[in-house]
Length: 281
Image (cartoon, rainbow, N blue to C red; front, side, top):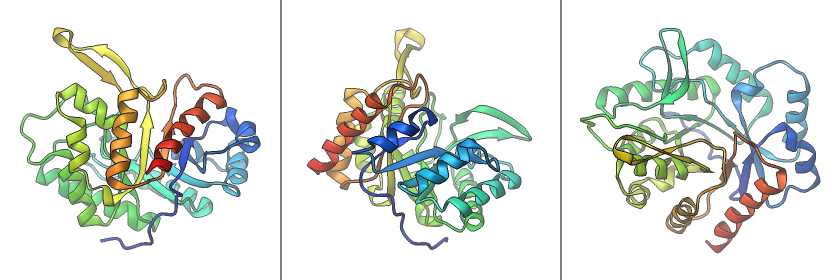
């Protein structure tokens, strides 16, 4: 089991950093207290992106969110990719590093998606081995994020919340609770999102994500929600977030908006909404 100090992100709203917001963030960031980057955008050796990130890191706690490790894949982790992540973390010294409970590569083929896992004992052992390896190489405790799902395996041996809790128990990792993912998965699979939150090990949560989704239609005209990160947080997701904070207390909370990125004022208003809920707690 990996043993390290707890994360140091403040219990304030954060936003996913976009370069077009650089000047506006420096001019008026409040109530945003920290920023998150996608690791794979910053694995180069220099240039304007690295220079801006160095400048921001002098003023804000930084969270690094990986999307390419394929921790849930059945094959070995890409050691070159993992070592590049280590180089980034070594110089940036982020307050947090997170990845997804998903797989996105197999046998040298990389897929542009984060795909779900069967929640079985064999999958659990494989994921724990990968988490142990990542934490050993990076020299830090990581957070593992619950996925958004659009289908379910026929005969899981445990539910998702229990699966994540067991990974955290075995490896010492923390968890990243994406409340929008909880809502999307629950609607797509006909389950209760609040019941999921009530089963989730909130004491293990080091960060919360909030984002927007879009709606399509599946078979028989049933709603199909897509975790698109291209709109404001939905009212029902805000309600689920308020329930989460009421149960687990304030947590560092990220506003994710990766597609059709709006002006800074719109993103900042979403952070202000999260700040009100955190303050009420």
